[in-house]
Length: 262
Image (cartoon, rainbow, N blue to C red):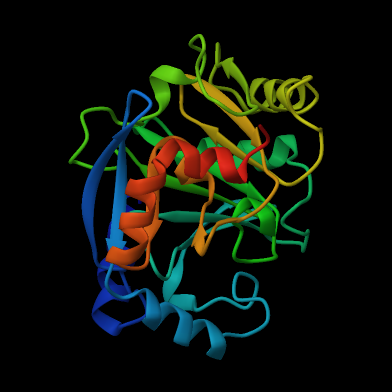
């Protein structure tokens, strides 16, 4: 069974059993800095927080078998995100424990490439707690595109990634010439060691079939709002209308500026 079909089958069964608990959201479009940001207001995040207090110490290693999708490679397996904001949210987990701020390897990119396949999707890595990682076992993630039906671009922030003046915080951007794990890893190493990136965690990595970007981080939160890699794609998640209004008042680009390196 192909991975995409397998994801749908596992998701259907896990949803029916209650193992999969999607977070219900309403999307607001907030324009700032020439970008139409998708800001999702959640209604069930508290349920996730209550569940997190009951979870085992390593939920990606000691995972719920109902969330298991497939063995991706000898070194990685794929799980459904238990609390997805969008359908088809996949976690690509290392079999042998490594911390979430560890450098990515060619094997990591091989597993990521297999999960991305030819589908329009976004791969990302939250390197460390300050980059928005909620689990300590090394894992990458894949979500389908577009990120939100309410905005015209599949990745809202994409036009600014290599534009001038572009984004108001440090980042390193490169185009992908070949969809190949070795090429991915080489570009990743190049971007990580560029003058705009410190070369160490925390940082966020995002990539599509066309490009890769690395954004160094200094903190996880803007006020009480957690920001992970999807924020730098143009998609923010807030707990309630009060947080939405804080994002609207500050401007989503300033939210990103506050948690990145200026």
